[in-house]
Image 1 (cartoon, one colour):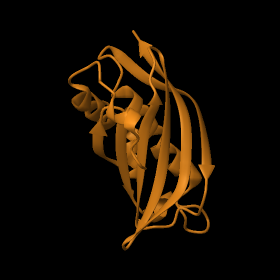
Image 2 (image 1 turned 90 degrees about the vertical axis):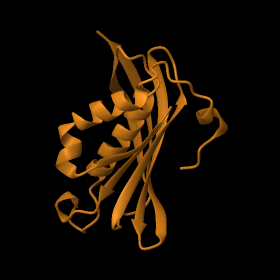
Image 3 (image 1 turned 90 degrees about the horizontal axis):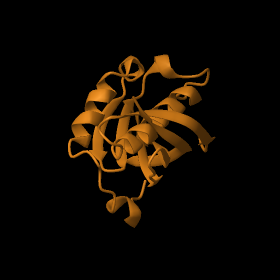
Image 4 (image 1 turned 135 degrees about the vertical axis):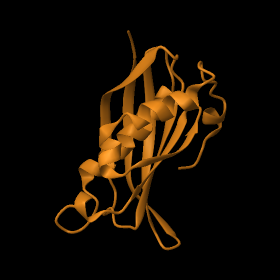
Length: 151
């Protein structure tokens, strides 16, 4: 995903945002179950990688759409979480996924970026790329609305 000028201007309200994102990500059992790894955290931007695993495929050997949605949802959520106050938790309240091509590759990379932060609602987008050899192919996108939950 190409970074835009707006993303570069985000200032996290919590100076320890990266540690907080990493800690929360480590508590997600689903990420451990599917073998997803958090590889990048910046203000308003998160990158998650997933190796190809036969156990995560649908009948034709492509990564299942539900798995694709899962890692893009987490990428959007943690991108938003990186900009939230330290007292907040993140909760997805809506997302839309577009499956653009079969998710075939040796590994997959989901990049989530906040497009519009707010006090309680955040709008984010994610792209999922399939990697094979030296090629990188966009296979899915997501738009998501996330909520900062207090208390």
